[in-house]
Length: 189
Image (cartoon, rainbow, N blue to C red):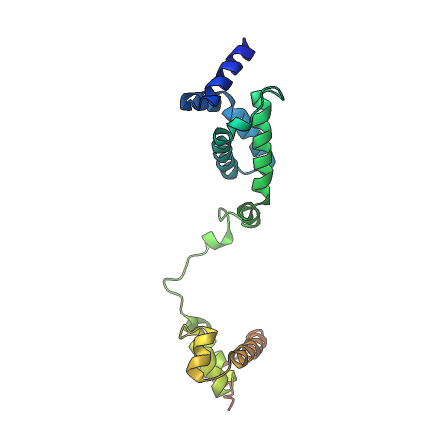
């Protein structure tokens, strides 16, 4: 009886009957989803993969050969391969490397109404830099300039701008690690 129903479903799928595809999904969708979920271990990605598999099964059904195996086995292999492909995608790797925010310390600390760099003394730290480097850093970090735009504005080669920025950041990083009295900062000239 099962084989007769399966044969009828196969004939309807070969005939491109959309109702047969709905019936196929109703009959096998949950099992195929569980197989995909076991491989990708992420419900959202498993749902996406299942939908992609259903589309793939619909469009590539002509390649199914009933003489080589049952319909479910063929669909299972299509889904298994799609799930493995999903593991190889960039989206999957990114979903594995990001952590959800629930329970995060960031959610427990209140955000400032508006973040201004002046609140942390960055402008005062710039006083440690030579005037030319200070102007460059102010253009980049307070003026919103790109490296290229700052190079054009200051009429400097791009490589020089990048070198000065790197050196300035290293100097400021070292200075920021030590407790400073901002009122007593020396001005470099």
